[in-house]
Image (cartoon, rainbow, N blue to C red; front, side):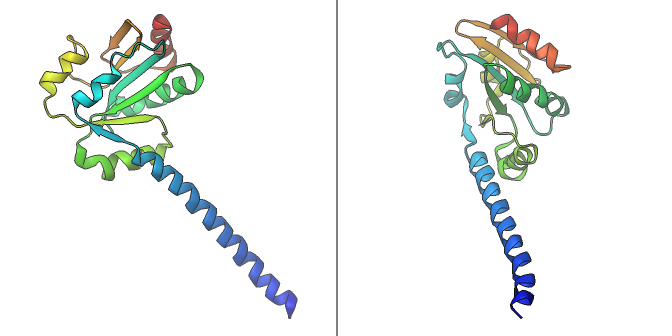
Length: 169
């Protein structure tokens, strides 16, 4: 009788253990996604001119932008392999934060710093990022201290991105 109970209880125990571990991992991911800061341009602009000897890669993108999504793996790889601080600036609508942006990040396992730029006055802030930028995305600002480069097109591959970054390193 005791062996019969163990045959049934042991699989149930392992199932419960598996579910508990799975849920704990999801909570961690959800907490990371809750860190998405929603700011207007005044709250964001502090990221554009840090003079702390770090290399910054600031990418303007949106979940609905196909070229943005296609180049995202190159940016994430760069963050893993090089000494850079990656900031992903989402231009998704604020109402899309919970319905589209967070699920996008979760599905792809993106844990990089993400800022939701919530400022409808794009005609005022776009030229402050770069006077030659027409607002099309993806667009990437690479800078270190006073040296910078603005690229207003998608990267075709990782090597192209790395080449641009090394010019600023």
